[in-house]
Image 1 (cartoon, helix red, strand yellow):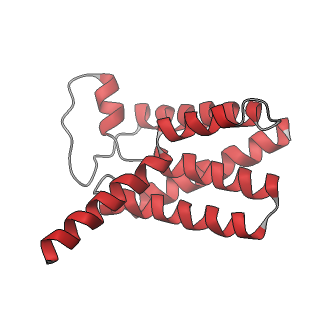
Image 2 (cartoon, rainbow, N blue to C red):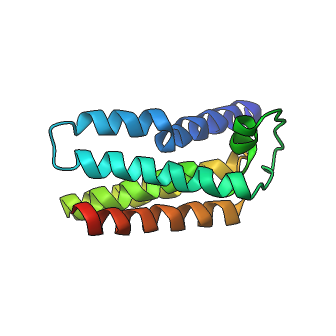
Image 3 (cartoon, helix red, strand yellow):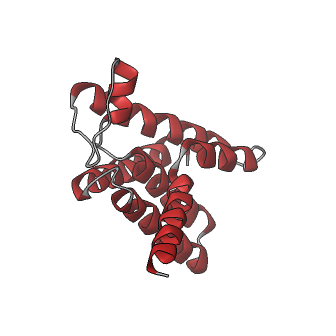
Length: 150
């Protein structure tokens, strides 16, 4: 029984972590293709990923569960700091909360962002400092994008 519950919990966090991934970000962007949010979504996604990759090029921090790498792209992917999943989900959560100004949606966005951030720790991809770094980048991206596009 305990093994089954543990396996289901692991699967739950794998599913949750996908909400901060590239595919989920792309899907959200496509859902808002005829919306005024399209340009901020694209710009925010590109800026968030760009900042994380730039940091990872110059600063390598191994993941809690170490990953092997043999080239620069693999090294960037094997680096833990900052969390790109967290940066993406924090950016999206703030963008949707502010744009829609709905208290229930804001609560949902906060819960999803916390779950995605925690899932990265649970899955041993990041530790707390990586999550905090990703959250700071997500917030900074939002404020920069809001200043330019909103």
